[in-house]
Image: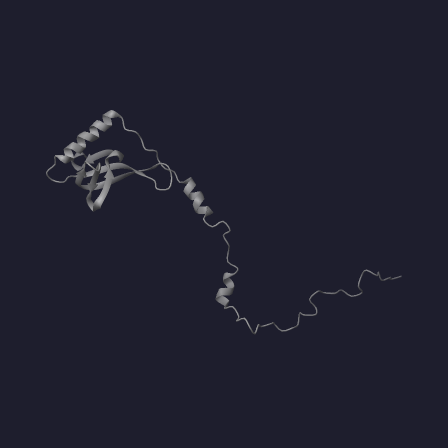
Length: 147
């Protein structure tokens, strides 16, 4: 004997059967979004903008500035004195420490070119292209004739 249960409908009811065949609604007050802009709403979203850059910055390594011993300081001082005594501006390779603007430490750089002047009162050496290097950051000077 087939009995119908009171809680079960005799025919299945689909929740959208009443609207499935209606025409698509077009607003009379709001203009339709262009297709080019419609796709943009589905583009990926970066919830943590800048987070990836912060991780890269934290992982970036810097060097610590080394303290020169007295012998190296004396040798550098002799090389600077010989630069002051030159009548023709010599070409040199200067190795120096450049402090990192964002974190502790920095990096060692080499600059090769003509030494245009030494400012003893500012404690800087000036190379061509207006590169100004503090004397206290220099760790080595090699003249082109030293090679």
